[in-house]
Length: 67
Image (cartoon, rainbow, N blue to C red):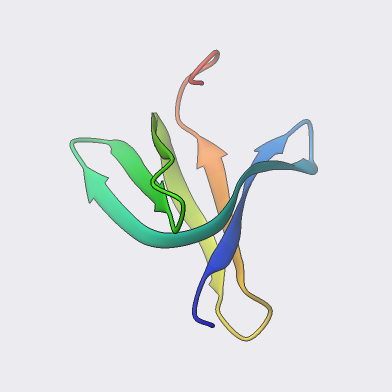
């Protein structure tokens, strides 16, 4: 499987944002995520790290209250 879990950094800790993400699209300062189950989310964040071996996407909010 090629999916990854997306995590959002909050207070130096990673919080699970979405499981089994298979689509990540940066657009206009936001990140669009879509899971294999069709769950969709757009968040004001930037990609801090992609660790594809460990199936992890780490996002950093670009503004407070971005979810």
